[in-house]
Length: 168
Image (tube, rainbow, N blue to C red; front, top):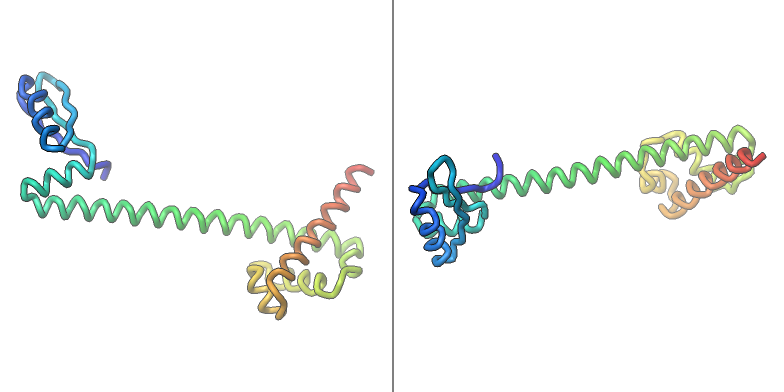
C-alpha cells in the first residue's frame, strides 16, 4: 500500500559489498545494520523494476507496474475531485453573494432602476439559483459575458450601498 521498497537481509559483513556490487550494475542501493544483520535497500520504483527485469521476475514486475498505474489513477482522480469540489464551493459562494445582492437592491428599489438585461439576469438567478452562467445565458438567449457583467454590476451596486451604510 505504501511506496515501493525492496530489501535484502544478509550477514552484516556482506551488506556493504552487496550494495557496492549492485551499484556497479547501475542498481544503486543503500545499506545499514539492523539487529545485527546487514540490510541492503532500494526505495526507487525504477531501480526495483530494473532489478526485476534483470532477474526475470516478470510477474512481480507486472504487479509493481499495476500498482503504480493504480496509484497514479487514484492521484489523478483525487486531483480532479478536489478541483471540482473547490469550483463547486466557489460557485455556491458566488451564487449566495449574488442572491443577497439582488435582495438588497430589490429591497431599496435600485434593482427596478437597472437596465433590462440586469433585471432579467437577476430574475433568472432567483428562479434558477443552481444554474451556471452558461446555463443562465442559454436560458435568457444572451451571451455568457452579458450575464457575468450583469451579476458583477449587481454585486458591485449592493457592495457600494453597504460601504456607504458603514460610512454613514
